[in-house]
Amino acid sequence: MLREEIIDHLNVDILCLNETHLTGSNEIDMTRYGYKWFGFNRKSIHVNAPKDSGGVGILVKNWIFDCYTIDIVDKCYEVYLPPENSPWGRDASSFFAHLLTQIYHHCEDDVILICGDLNARIGKKQDVNMCTDSIPPRSSSDLVSNNHGQSFLGFLNDSCCCVLNGRFGNDSGRPTFHSTRGQSVVDYICVPHDNLNYINDFRIVNCRDIVDRCNLVSLLGKRCKIPDHNLLLFELRISTLHAPAENSITNSKPRYNLRRIPTDFMQSENVINALNNLIINIEQCREQQTTIDSLYKEFCDIVST
Image (tube, rainbow, N blue to C red; front, side):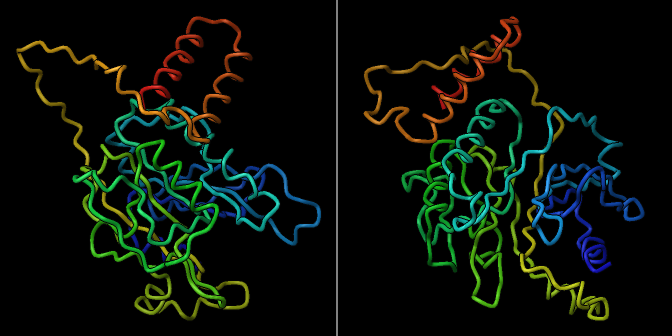
């Protein structure tokens, strides 16, 4: 009940959730609040696990279905990287390489949003090239960085993405996770550089503040506690109207100066892993023309990004 009341208070159009702890075909029913659920539950739980774990999902307001045609083209992408000390969190490079492959595959989509719990701490390290004047500087209250954070920074550089945390609105890089051992920034929302113009606002909301403001303390108990992760909220404004075509015809095909290829071109670990994943897909394809065309396009995207 507590989480339902918090969601109802937020009244957002789209809500992405980590750690739903759902199994099988179970769903989160929020129909009475005007939401439709799309989830991807963990298929197997360790026999010694004390309770269900994992799972991700998205809640979408019903009005969006009245205005847009929504198709599910693939299963949910789980943007959750376990902690470094976890047996499942020791291969951050493969995690980000897989995510980078998906970015390349969908690079022509209008808007790409990546959000989730990455257990990556990047401290005050910059996630973009400081020579990029169009991107505001980032602030952070978390001064600590870890190995996951270093891999995360490499992914951001290779994918031409940046985090919204500490960069938009009034957020000064507030912590996203609280525990008895302290607080940190481990949850992020990331977008490609050319999508930043769609972002109007970003803020981090502490669930404790909502509980106090809405008098929800009575819902707390031994089995119902305040979430230890904060809520990351942002405003995305997009137009469904396309700009009128200009009369003049211009050549939109880019031209590359092959004499100015940087010495570290395609040398990062994430790009190498993305290429290896592509090679595996090529070896496993059934020589259908549509599949070959898709793989060729993905290779071109990796090279040109």
